[in-house]
Length: 394
Ligand SMILES: [Fe+2]
Image 1 (cartoon, helix red, strand yellow):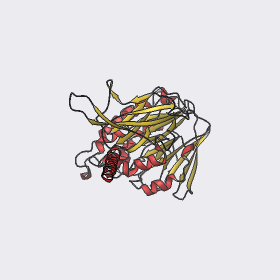
Image 2: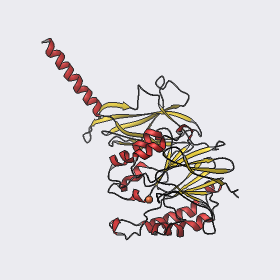
Image 3: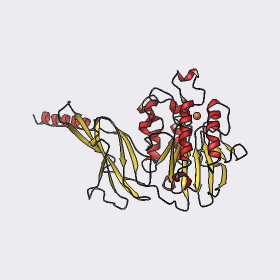
Image 4: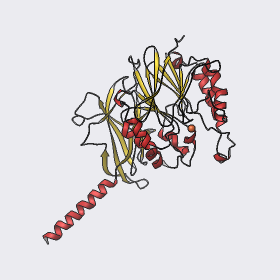
């Protein structure tokens, strides 16, 4: 009898553990759209949940000794609980300040129409094993040297992505840029994470914010229409102006590379009119105080438009180059060609362009006088090096 009782207890314990483990954090968290006063934290769970982020000052080593403010995803005052995708904006933070954070998700077991919600277990990131994750909000004034790193065209090659990350000191990296074609075809959420976002999370994205510039391949696949959900910029567009102190980063969306009528796009492409709309936005943004008060101006575009003769390159060149040539741009960073190249400024394009390879990373160090650009191989060696002088702004 005693044996049966022990076996039954063991069975029940196993059953409970399996049930408890069934609900878990599946991907993330990663930090997105960092600003001087906020950031968005994104993660997924195995089942729908009510989720929140707890925040503590960076010098608070005893995260669990005190209660901390909770941030939820809300729509018109109601906390969201029917999705397994969680996207929480932290607001009202101080510029240049370190914050600790921890994510929580409480499983929604059932919710029958008008009835009450039945909750299950609550999971959190690494409660017992690790310190909370942390980040530093963007400063209003940059320090003497600002470092950012760019990856592009990895096309879901996680091995190359990991090898490149090994040679980067992310603790000394202020910002990462993913400059397009990180994927091949966006078929579903799982592919988006396993293709490259999980690798980004493992290496840096829990602590170091990143910018995402859409490449032409991010327009492809049945799930591509959902991409904005994973990169929620505050302006509701993929193109954006981002400030880091007095550095201005103009992130462009290049659209597709071939004409809209190309058979490959299955009658779904309308990128000519999209780029025209984006050019109107650019015209306005180049007149804004946010842009005009910047001292360093860098353009991020997956497709380079100072070289190449495909439709996308030519259309971008026609629409954007006349505007940017008058805007005191210091540097443009691109990818797409799967080959490193450097294009100095000339009569046609009044700023230099660096095109990064698909198997190297690009590191920029911005100081008071210039931008030091280095192309780094998977062995950690320097493939190319350029120093771009910052032009005085009016
Ligand atoms: Fe591309």
